[in-house]
Length: 353
Length: 283
Image (cartoon, rainbow over all chains, first blue to last red; front, side, top):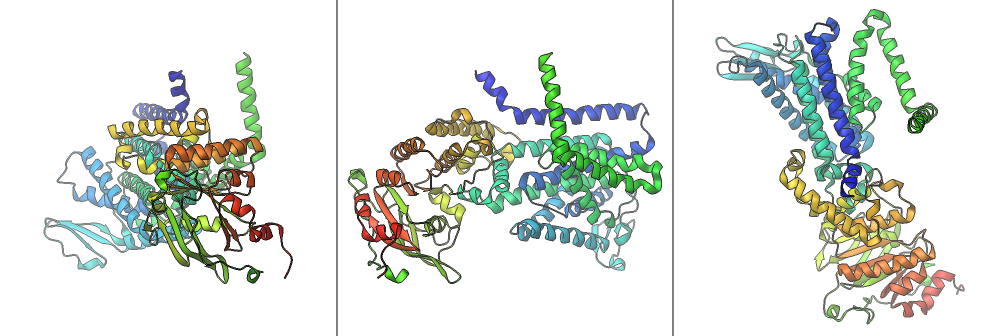
């Protein structure tokens, strides 16, 4: 009896377990294929970005699906994490020789800076609801882009120097510029690996699943379902909104750092409004609050444009059509009903057999 | 219309309002007391000059025709609305600077007229959310699954089932709250409110949509809850059999004004109340 009850309780845990399993299997398969040289070079180059975007989608799903607030500025947090992480990795180039250690530190720094940005944005923004919150986060994304476009950072023996005017940085002997405004960071040392990306996704999943299935996560979902009722049972609205938002921002920052350290050059205008929308598309397509959906959607939609490269001029067109078709297939009640009926029939025949 | 109602000078409902209330309450100050409470929405006065006192273990009723301002009173007591005038004392403490969350932590829990459950979460999670402030572990303990998480979650799980057993709902613990039948959703709201360990429980039309036998059962349960938890209950209800049977003190509102206060017998024979409910001759 007791055992039986436990089994019933684990419906969420089973979904979570399958999600972990899916990620692990995908990693093992892709990694062995990559080691055996069976992957196309285009796809090979996409492995790290896929991991970064999957993490981004998971992070945004925490805000959109679990907290229930629309954020249109998540590329902003990704950007903060990307530049903080890349600058940190570059500055530590001589101090920390081991690449994995340097990458780990860079990811943590990226997450920390993005979390800080999350707190700063969260203080005014989380008092707003619905559309207003979306508008302010959108503005935040643009502001971050402008700031980084005008930021110059150099390093020398005395440490880091930052300025908003190019020629005011006086670097000592052996000093070098890391970030030069609109030029971005030209010479990023690629230290991100597929394995690191996989570990980041797993850590993100652990953080999100464990957060959601705890006292704090329940409070966050309660805010989504019914804010007034949540207040009436003594849940501190600002605290839990902030908790979800900042956690989401930190994870986005780590994803940004991973992404940046897998590129040769990185510029601020990469993280624009389109990027925020793209990540939102991953979340909406995968299903709000459904983490495995976000993972599949992010991975598929990151690879798809590469696979469609052969169509060259029609690439974005086909991409759009595929998006619309998938949306229709997953959200059209008639089609959904059809597929559900089909699934039920399959199940029935399985039982009969 | 409003000038036809003669307002008596404010008089607090005596505590205890009927000899059913245990002796021990006789000398104690009321659990909740509001004085000259009022709120205006623009030019409209929704509630005016409400004086109310509720004993420590009293079951009190708030009745009145539709639109009388009963739910507004609940919203004032729980600070969903900030009162324009007057004071609310909860166990002797002025709730002036508190918000809804703080009022709940100070000891008022409520249910809603239009059910407000966390409908995508399980029944058990809904109760655990009521227990939120009594579960003692933080975000990091939750994320890293430290011993505190397991200990507190186990305690919360047991407590939630215990609370659900009041209404014999422990078997529904894993069901989604939104998928429950209407009556069960109403009962779950009461359980969730009780989980916050209130001193005063506000029930907004708990018997709405229930059949007579369900209402009779609910009546027993409200008395049982009062007796086991030793708390006060203030309820809004249109079902007069329920109100007259279990309420020890009743306050009648009409157009935001208090038109009568007293024991059920007094209320049943009050001409003002009869006029408000059935209409009266124009003078």
